[in-house]
Image (cartoon, rainbow over all chains, first blue to last red; front, side):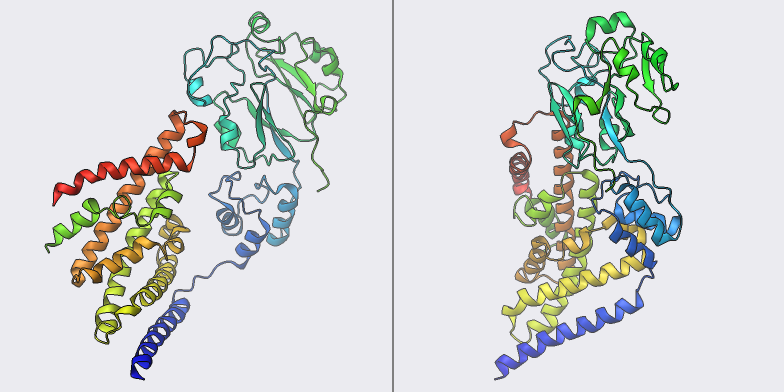
Length: 276
Length: 191
């Protein structure tokens, strides 16, 4: 009988002592946490992408609740989460626009030439470090070696014909690809602005003509066509002011190289459901 | 046994990861980034040290006198889990910075087999309290060394080499670990 009772007593004893110790310690070492932090953690998406600039969703929740961080920083949750955070914190949040990442290059395998055949490491950062900044004849263009694909937590980027293409339905604007691209081609743009300049090259017209069929040659036709003062050519590159652009399509129509694209018309990607 | 010999033995000659093959899941799981692997290594160091003291006491003062050697698996897991919980609370209160640094690794290694393994080896080799502590420190530093080396290699692999598709991810990691284990075999003649 004691053969059974002693082990049971000892194990139960160990368990009991530990339980009492832990229970006691939980009281002694209790850390008072702002209850809003937990509410915020529940509201945040929990993907820990770091797009807000904090180490993760929990760190951001603490930042908002304790250190007064901006409640609109969560790019994954967008305006919906920003409003929920505002409700919890008791502040009014101006719902911001949904932003997505956009690859400013259309020079795919057919349209842009290569300087040489590249047989090295399949990584844009390594390739861009080579003389001439990679194989593509345009030094500003997308190398298509999928460094952005590798860093995307949301599976939103594919390489098609040697160009990175972002699926705007999946993109959360976390900014990982923007940081990773050695050519700084990827930019955050408003999702609703469908007219965009698909070129990143600051080269002059002659170089562009040699290198790429769809590069911006800085002819300024778009600037003249725009009635709203929304597009300007600086440093040999057209740039749209998305605040002013009304998406009238005038620049798209006059662009001789089809550099400016209207995503609504070419159906590269469908716009997200904006009411969500 | 001399304490130094115990230490060298646990850290290099019989490295827990690369020659005893304990704690492999943590070793492979948290060795993608070097920063994370350092955190994991420190957490293991921490837990192994206190766990070996705790379990040594329980074994020597409670189990052995009553002839309950067969209960040590259950009792050790219980003690380790409780200790980790306790340490987590203390660290959270005393040093939030350390708590943030260790992060999820603390609870993660509660039932790490390397931690359980070192406590078993302590009682199996009939080590004293000091010996147990030194053994745990050596084992943990060995784990730290292995995981940080591994993470550094894997970071480098991801960055500068084109791994064939069939070997990407875990396969190449396992091959790397195998090669590291072979190189650690070189320490066998040390003692």
